Length: 173
Image 1 (spheres, helix red, strand yellow):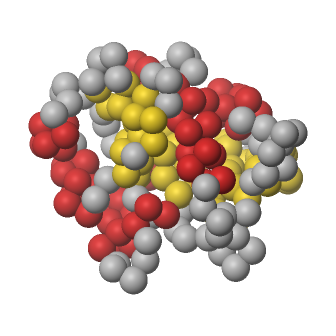
Image 2 (image 1 turned 180 degrees about the horizontal axis):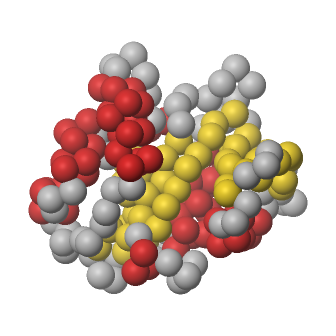
């Protein structure tokens, strides 16, 4: 688990991911959390079924690099968002992330804090050299989360901006 000022980031096990995908508050009940109003987008549902759950089930892989890390707001004992690493580091030591904050918790700086916590965790993993992310060009809030965590733009497509954070490249590190 990763702890930040306001949040606890908890990596979900295979069984917990199955409950997460059911979206019936069974996961919240297991974790002793208040019920949530979270919804799963079609894209996340597909990622859970096609990639995340099968990768976490693969015992040859370190599940921490494939599972959802759910963010729990300490003061409310409630899930507020998730962050995911898209698999183990590549041969260059790069990992890629994706994230989302539940609607009612957006605009409060939680994702900036979630990402900051994950960056601290990644720095402690000797194999991780950089973190990559992509944002939709129209998603200004997501771009701001990356900028606040010292990511730099490394390219773009017609619809996406690609970002990178070199681990250990920030001043004083």
